[in-house]
Length: 391
Image (cartoon, rainbow, N blue to C red; front, side, top):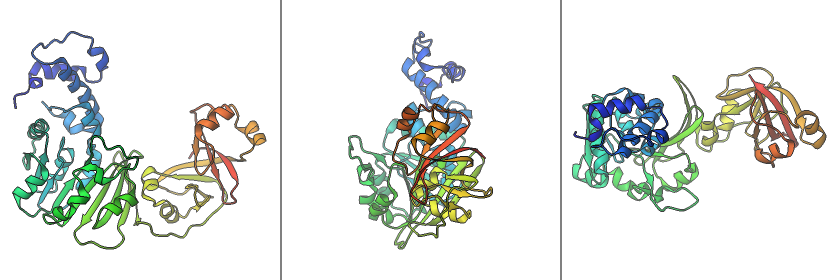
């Protein structure tokens, strides 16, 4: 591929300046008159973004990056590796290829991967990058993915789709029907080419809304990276009926925690006033609705039906944050003035009528430090404050 940024001197400049403020670099004179300065600066910014998110891309030679925004929006290698664990078989087609991060790892599980991309430039860049990454079993096809699917006229072990919201979609509620491709409208067509479909969506999508739009949902994976939910993975199987499984996944470095259950299933919950330790479920559990299942499996008691916090008398392993409770206050003027006003604390609000910002302003509480204050409601419907330290 002949691209101006592949010039050896330009590549060295991009490497040497990765990590430097692009706003300051922009003030310099372009040392390469034959290459647009904005294009070079974009490569510097995008490569810096790739350093932590896409280490294989960052380490490879002569990689071409699309816009910095594209790198920000693409899957990380960590979540791509997780996706690849969910597929099997010989052939997979990605209908929304993009930068191709997911396909790199799908190609380690499937002998043939087809990368479809509507944007001609992005398709060419992806093909070039796959060559630089020494991946030989991914075929890049440029054009409309539905047209490619029909022209290939083959059966696939998996279809993978990462729909993006249409420009101009303004509804407050995120709907799959507002995305391209329109998966709900095309689902029957897709199922004629594969019995297994994986759809990746943003965490913004409400799970119950997704289930209302999609048929054949066998499982849902809520995937968080370092306790931040990054994506929802919908595994669809042709003619699948019944209640889907749901998995709350939190990936942390080389470790992971997974809590599983059936979507919407009831779990026996024990309630208690605050004991010695406090537990806050990780973000994947919160999004998945497996809050009670996580507490039950760890043998914990819940503070209140709607508080989403747990407690125990002794230390217990739990997929989330754990704290040692130092003090429990009733939320009233005298208690707050005596024990909380003017202190430096990290504030969390759960099932409480006052916002974090209002609490900070009213009680002059500074942000940060080693003390954590949880404002919540207990099983007796009393408003309380738990002063804690990390355990």
